[in-house]
Length: 338
Image (tube, rainbow, N blue to C red):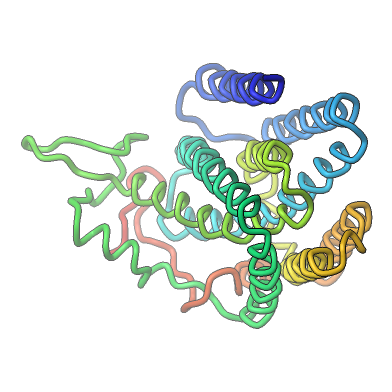
């Protein structure tokens, strides 16, 4: 019963936060300034710390350490999403004042998708323990593949999902304010903003397939996995607006993220085979060192690069394909490229 009330109470708290965000803080379409984004990001971080302290006090020290390790891991891997958000918004020339709306609904959908994936994963692991070996091997493979594709560049122009949407649905040529759908002559049209939202949702689903197995290497407790994921995702939107102006300086972060996935996958395999040989505290320390070290190297290595050159380096490697091209159009009525 206590477990059920924890789930209900936590989700009600999250719904209140989301309602406050959309209904009060960002009621209309406006550009989110860096100062506001930093304050929001700090606020979500403090809430995560308070919640983690509560887990530590009421559920035990081990659960608390698992939460903080999972939160750091998910927060680090979520930076991967920011690079892709920058790419998508840049390619489709999404006006800054509409970006928050896209990310709000995108992250709301991400929370639902991750809840389903986490509960499904926990159920599968509880029923078939050997699945842990598959998860561990998948993480090692994913980390190695990420390293191998670092110097490749993304192709938004030939994205199959975009081409499929344009074949199957009517899409307006320009944005229609902050609306996702419009009616013209009795026919329903998608707007380019809806196409962008779909891409954001799909990109998070792809990243979730990496990050959720990674946190199962830390703990198999569904509540800890879910809550650490939610706090990391909630702060992602604010983190995007806080870092969008300097994200080009973190090119070498992807090396750190790749190594984190490989280390976490190896931990999962070793602990599954030989018992808890590698403690959670060690995973927390290694993750912090890899992420912190790669960020430091990024700042040092790119400090003298022009912004444009650093941005090209930063975006490269996150999605394979061909060079990025910005869509035509101005800030008020950008068009979606065919």
